[in-house]
Image (tube, rainbow, N blue to C red):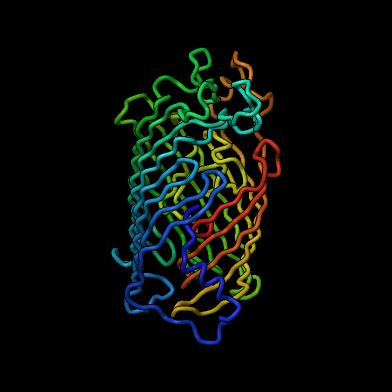
Length: 429
């Protein structure tokens, strides 16, 4: 959901005149530069700001793999959200291993909240709680700010098998929807935290702190990191979250499995790619404001949220499905339609039709939701599968910088209306 740069747009315009005739250029040393951030996401609006990518390819021996990458960004969205972020991926700093870090601050005065357990929460896109038929509805929104700091390391065991470990810290601040245009409206967040409902408890309604200790295994046989055409990438992680700061009793242990497989159909020109993600709580209790987090060590997208939005089930309402545990499957074809060279860089245009699905596998406070005395808390049904379908276009430079343009449609009426669109960086997986 991030940026489309002037240089990438120029490359697209020049496409008809730049058919590839030469061998691929081997990149060495530094590739960097400040870039404008211009993007769009249906959930957040238009994005603008500045970012800078720093790539180092060393002597080019490992190209298209880079030795390390550092990114910094400051951007904001027309619907009010803003982001300050820096992340780094260092592939040669640790012998036969890598180091990843991410430090991000998210400000979201209008953050989606669609209740617990997917279809168990009623959805009415035209809800008008203030009685004014011409007013915008803020029923499914609240305010959320979050600071995130992650560091993860990976070290080879044998061949493509590695052990991995990491530390994570999240500070989340929550509030009701305070924007002037929604003044006087009651939101679903307001209803959930009413004392006689209690789905959102007093000690979590304003947010809190989460500290995580992560340990797991990874298995990676991909031919490229950002633009793979074959191989597998698997991450299996145990995550322990001791409630050592707030002391509200939200200690928990969870497990996350994320596996991607890239199957060549026609050489490296057409690839069938799919990803299975399963996350489950093993014991303890998760504060509600952390039920949407995917506990992965190495990020592909800026947001690590499920289910709904550009990082999970594309086309479904962002954070539309919350539970103690969830599963999703993403499937797509990736067709390298055109390869060409421009400004001494290697470029590709890729089309990727996709189909996504997901659901909760462990409900969150479901019996309490079902028994609520307030009308509009429970829909009368349990959660089921959610489906979306769409099409993407990728503009890829040197197999590493991937501009993504995607559109998708939710196939169930309760999961969103209209066409979801996103302009950002990277494949989903």
